[in-house]
Amino acid sequence: MRGKYSIVVCFLAICLFCFTGCATIGMDIAVKENGSGTMQSTVRLNKAEYIEYLRSTHTDLGMESDVDDIINDELEQGIYTEEIIDNVPYLVIESSDETTEFDSISAFYTQIGFNSSYELTETSFLVKGSTLTQQELKNKEYLDSELSEEDIKKYLGSSYLELSVTFDYPVKETNGTIDSDNPKKVFWKYPLNSDVDKIYAYCDSSISVSGVTQGTVNREPVTLHFEGADQAVSIDGQTIANNTTFSVDGTYCILLKNEKEQKTVYFAIDRTAPELQDDSGNEVEFHGYQKKEQIIYLLDDGGGILSATLDGKSVLECDLLDNEEFLYYVKLVPSGLTDGNHTLIVSDLYGNEKTLTFKTDKTAPTVKGVKHKKVYRKAVTVKFSDKVSGIKKATLNGKSVKSGRKVDKIGKYTLLVKDKAGNQTKVKFTIKEKKVKKKKTKETTKKNIEKKNTKK
Image (cartoon, rainbow, N blue to C red; front, side, top):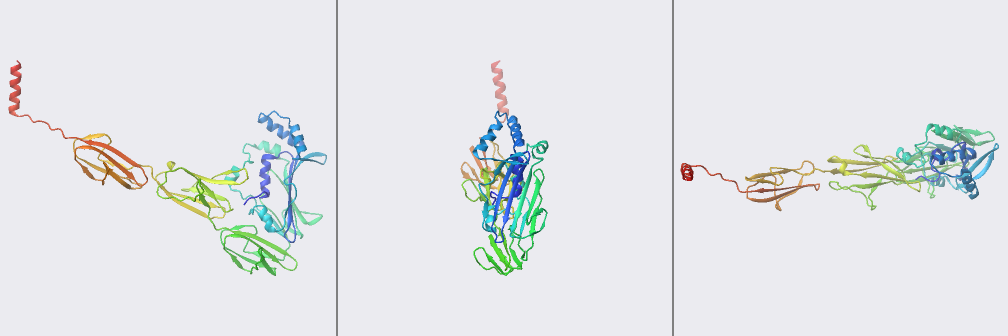
């Protein structure tokens, strides 16, 4: 559920990779009394410092190119426009060709991908920070782990984020700065090499809401309580009674009104666990003992995957696709696991879990009493066992046999023992006739002596 305007903090991360020098990232949001509004973002790069950065980067990469020509070509193509601020040339990049408009708070949340780091109403604005997990941040292509502290100071030291929000009501509480010429406008300015923990602004409003937090996804049912509103209507026109409980999965947009004001409440219920699929798009189910290596894809219904653990150890992997979406998956390699029971638990950002259990057995059955290719001249007792999955089938020369079977007939034998996991042990052995030693008698001794005397 992350869109083009997913989070303000996202711009900070982009700049760590793309922008440098004295750069300004501006984002302007305006919200009207009726819930409609606009969004516009702009990037301004100090031209000289940006060119210096590009030269340094191209040199490090062994690229021989004229950076000035590159910038001029991109200016001609309209990728940048040039603007002079305090006699300093800046390259200006618009994030969109025109201002993005939203006709309602509901449309705003839809456009930003309903990212729960945002809270917006006609009288309030709050950014709580990034909702990306550590695994997602690790895989963001624009997070350059090679950027040293020295590089950050050199190229980002004078870069900053500018954010402004304009309401139709005067701002009463904020950690930003209220415009001296317009009490309805508030703005913030943050260096790009620092973390933004929280941004907020609130206007006076006679309509208050409790039980539901604006712009959030809830795993448990929520009860909407409101005061100061004469009516509450859902986006499809249904009247909502005060203290209504919402428990069914879905997205809800409630419009609260009185004679002078209106306030939108936008939230969702998500009680659905992630779905696990194989390469063919089929739901993954484990039956019996697992031997096959496979990729298990983790699908969520928009909430994002938080974790995947196998026997308590993290196994979550994710890749950032070209469309800025994350692909979550787990590589299951049974051959690398110990014999026995295993548990895979996948959780989304809202605590919904999917649990799968399976077993592994890589150990073949144990055979005692006979050894492979050995010849015996006496009866043998064949014994076999399997401590992990147990014996599924055992045959002696193709016929079913039980452990403890005594074999005494002369011949060649093949013992084949299979366990319930598919492992098998094969033992070939032979039983031959027992050698009989002749006993020496007095008569035999006498004949032997006579033979010797005759030879003399």
